[in-house]
Length: 405
RNA sequence: GGAGGGGUGGCCGAGCGGUCAAUGGCAGCAGACUGUAAAUCUGCCGGGUUUUCCCUACGUUGGUUCAAAUCCAACCCCCUCCA
Image 1 (cartoon, chains in turn blue, purple):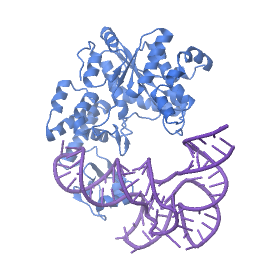
Image 2: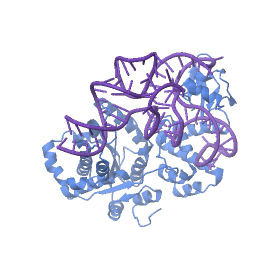
Image 3: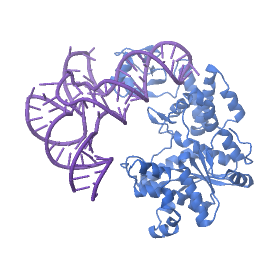
C-alpha cells in the first residue's frame, strides 16, 4: 500500500493512507512537494447547500495537503452552476438563482472551515470560477483557448465516447464542460500558482486536459492526482442510504445520524475508512483493524467518533457517542436522539410518524404488527399511547424520545 | 419530414377489457440468527381505515363500455430505421 519511494510528507501520507489512484508525474510532483510549498485545488459543485460523503475523500486530501505544509484551494463551481451542469441523465434540473448559489457557497464553506485552516501561513482559500468564466468573450476564448483542444481527441474521452457509442444525446455545453474545467486550472495556475489538481478517478481526463492546457499556453508544469473510487465492501456506492445522501452539514443531517452512519460500517471497510476518513496515526489504525470478531465494534466506535469530530466538532462527536452508548449498550436514551414533541399522550402510530420512523400511518401500523415497534423496550400494540419521557424505537437501530411540547 | 416501437409503483420490468393496488427482480423496512457487521431464512412493501371498505395510481386530455393499465382519438415525451 505505502510507497517508500516518496520523499515528500505529502505524497508519502496520501500513498500510505490509500488516497492515490493515478498521478501524472509522481516523481516530479514528489520532488516539488519535498522542495517547497505546493498549491493544489479540488473543484466542487455548489448546486446543493451541503456536500456529502462522496466529497469527503477529496476534502481529506486537501486537509493532508495543508497538514503537510502545502496550500489548499477550494474551487466552487459557481460559474458552471449558473450554466446548469448537464452531466446528469435528465436535463430537467432547475436553474439556480444567484442568491441560491451564494447561499450554497456560504453553507458549504462552513464545512471546509472544519477541515481546513483559512488563516495562518498556508491559509486555504476558496474561489469561485464565476470570477473568470462569466466574463469570458466567446471569440477571444475560442481563439486563445479553444485552438488548443483537438476535437478528435475530445471525442476519445470516456465521458464523450460512452455517450456517443450508446447514441445518447450529448449537448454542446456538455461537450464544452471539459474545456471550462481545463480553463479553471489555467486560471488558478496563473492567479495563485496552483500546480496540482486533485479529484476522483472520473476526473482524470479533465485534469489531464488542464495540465496540457497549462503547458501549451503558458509553458508551465502542472500536475494531476486522482483518488480511487471508494466503494463499500459489498460493492455499493459509498454514502447512499435509504434516506438519501449522507450530508456533511449539520442542518442537513444531525450529528447523531452522521455518527451512526460510520458506526454501521461493514467489518471489511473499517481499516480502509480509518485511513481515509480520520486523522489517527497509522500505528493506531493497524491496531484497531487487527481486532477480532466482535472486538471490531470498538474500532467502529473509534471510526465514528473520529470521523464525526472532524466534520462536526469534538463535542458533537462525543455527545453522539455518549448517546449511542446509552441507547444501545444500556437500553436507555441519550440526549441526541430524535425527539417528537407532544402536548398530550399520543397514539404510538402518530409517534412513529412524528419521529420520522415511518412515512405513513400504514407503515407505522405494519411496523407495530411485525413487532418492530417498542416503547421503553417493550413491544408496542397498535392502540398504545405514549407520553413525554418515553422512548420509542423502530427496529434495533432507530430510537427516539417523546418530549413535552 | 416519412415508417415503426415505447412511456406501468424508488429503479428495472410483466400485464394488454372484468378475478389489477397491478406477476417478477432490485432497493428498502421488520422478524429470526448475531456483534448497531456480513451472509442466510421468514414476513412486509401506494394512502386511509381495527379492513373482504373507501380514496389515489399505469405519459396528458377526452371518448367507447355495465366495466379500461388494457380498446379508440388527439396531444406531449423517448427510442429505432429512412430522408
